[in-house]
Length: 252
Length: 331
Image 1 (cartoon, rainbow over the protein chains, first blue to last red):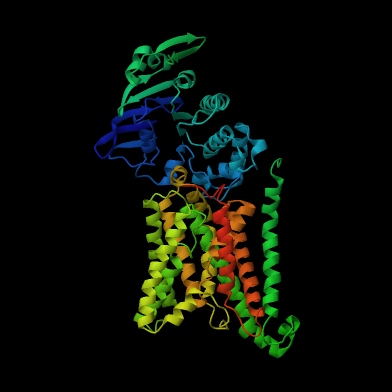
Image 2: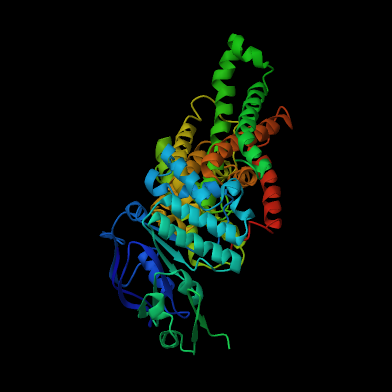
């Protein structure tokens, strides 16, 4: 379980995350949605200790995120963020090997190699393993990062807008892969999403934020409702049931 | 499994052996070339030859290998940690700060042993480089090319301070020898400090994975449990120490730390554990080659090797800046 208690972050007079307390489960897919500036990514950055909070605590299975050693946290929690400045020319396999760092400190054991190989094939990247990361398409690269997180073999996986800049086929591919990780590997996947319909289709739980606070939290059926969504985004929604999916419409 | 990019993989496997071969051949050539007319065989068989080998030829060749490898590795580490391909001891103010340090140690503690000079010079180099790193982290640049330009500017400030004191103390000539590497004075007993740079290179190799992780970016490194601040401090200390050792013993070789890592990673990619040894060997090979050239071009006189590498380095540097179309644009 990830326990977040009173996390707060301000920039000047603007409070971006305002005393958020919540617990994240140790299994399943949890999506965090909300308008721009709601504090979703800031919250995720604090839980993944990339950003220090002004107040509050966060712990992963009882390990304090901010005071424990980086490696101890990295064995429990992995982070996938938007790679805005990926300039390193390394191969897909070399990237995935970075995932073993918290376990081996860089010197790969035979176990490490095996887990890298299995992560690559799980993400359907065997044939691209020796390709340079910079040669891949956006969707392939995102899969490579997921493979790295898989090799890191943590119970919790935090992803910040993993569908950014992906076309529909790649976005769906990444979401299916994450869903599979939760179902088959017993992982807890926590992700910030902009597309509420992807959240609706793939999540076990949806947390909606607005103005630095959690305003709705529950199963998709509870959050993907016209009332809840209007409250979060401040615009009208209609929600349709299509097969198993709840689909929110807001285009007109 | 290897279905794609065969050329890249081939380059990565072949590169270390090519580099080893280049170092061996160029080292043999370096041993064989000199004012005294001795063949390579005589160096090992003839008693006079053996004396020449032990006192002069071998020390010079060893010094070239050590200094070249050390500076190239320093450049690679600095490029990795700052995530900028243009950062190297000569473009980040490190060399100038190290020079200022030697000068200060000479003025204040004239009788300090070599090791004392190295340590004071290291401290200056580290402080000077830290100023640079903090500056480039604080200032947002529109173009990555501004980063080394600022380093050169900062280096100019350090050098100006050094020149001011050197002028007053009548040491301007020494200043020149520290800034521009010259191996003509290397004989037995006057280069051994360079082995420390070799040792620093081995330490650097042990940290290669951490440097590589830090080079992927702060967020990335934090995610896999790497303490970026600590790793950066270690890396810059190694680079500063290495630069200081080279400056104190033979003088800096301009641009070597810039061009060698760039050429090597262009050929074999950025996997640091693989790139580090190849960079060391390539740095050694380039220094050996240029020094041999420096010795034969105007026989029986010599050109300082720093001048030759500097000319070559400036050309490659310009080429790198101009072909920044692809991976050199990160800002």
